Amino acid sequence: MIRRYDGAVKADPELETLRQAIDDIDSKILELVMARVRVVLSVGEYKRKRGLAVYDPERERGLLDRLCSAAQPPLDRETVRRIFERLVDESRRIEQRHISTR
Image (cartoon, rainbow, N blue to C red; front, side, top):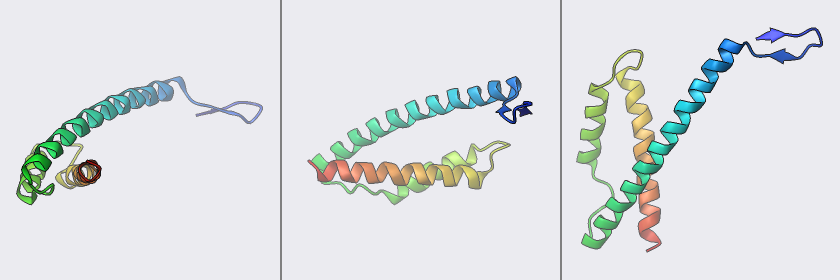
């Protein structure tokens, strides 16, 4: 950051460029999460029609194991696990809410 003579702080142009890159990536991640949730809701509808449980621990375990195995630096397995556990938990919550309103 660059501090101007009047005390205001102006971000360095290089920092602003990097932050914009993060913002762009975050927007893409959000689009992908929304696409994932749409598929999750379709899976939930499929399960509802067939009387299947929302929670499938074996599927979840396999998913997390597969993703953790694909982790590469600077990400480690534990970070990937925590990120996707949260994503899966929230997806399950949305799926359950969707099914219960049908």
